[in-house]
Image (cartoon, rainbow, N blue to C red; front, side):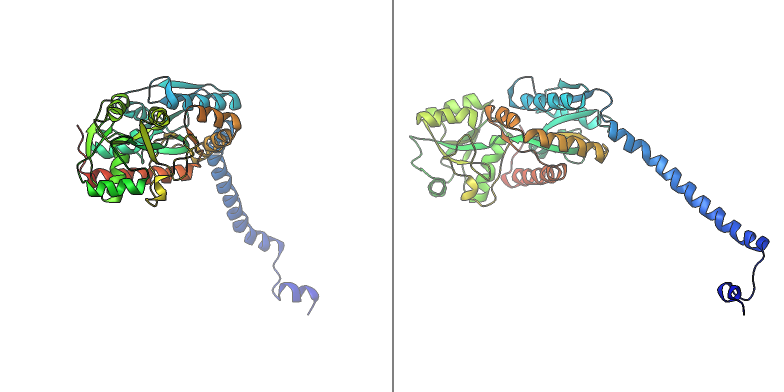
Length: 351
């Protein structure tokens, strides 16, 4: 037996026979290569779109009027993205209906990354929990979370003359000894101030009478005047009166101490896990390509980590967040579920 026989077998094929055998295999290989090429070409537009995004102006929907902390947050983020990527990020204020009008524009927009918006706790959690049938969109499912920009923790304050409690544990004891005898004010039924206080009452098994007002200013005026005893209020309206001694701060609604009230302990120190912070975050219509969402999220996070961004937020009383898209999406879902439960357990009915 020759070496050739040992290597290739006893029945050697002729050149013609070998070509006949190879043809089907060659054809199959060519088909596989063609299929791979087609799939690569199909995927290329999406990748190319992401690499050049944005290639035209981007509309930034802000569901509140110009001025104020929320509008400032949207404009500073838009200005940074415009400077970074060289395309206009045009702020479009669409206030009304508790921010739902503007966020409905975002939800209905084409999911291509060229319409984004500044969602918030009212439009994407609390109001849909209080008035589910009145909303034209799903507060979580109809949006692609990009990044939570910032939050404004609330302050639990009491009338310094009418309430003897100097700490939150003492206040809880005082409430348990006087169920439904004390009242608290809020800026309206279904507001963050309302649900924040109800969340605390539910978690502590205490009861108070709710007095809704049309805004924070008259609510704080009555609190100082002694018509009500307590409130879960925004720091911008309550802290000046804490400093004069007319109100006493018992706790901050964030999990950690807030920079604007470093001497006020978190409510979570007494009520584990308590966290109620009105938040604002950038989001896009559901279905926006993940690559575009991630590109926006990563750049916004990087910007918010800069000293200039944090200084601007602090000047407006805002705590910087700068979350990832994934963490923001999870937070949105948890927030909505939390306030649905508060509304149900507290028996809150829309006006």
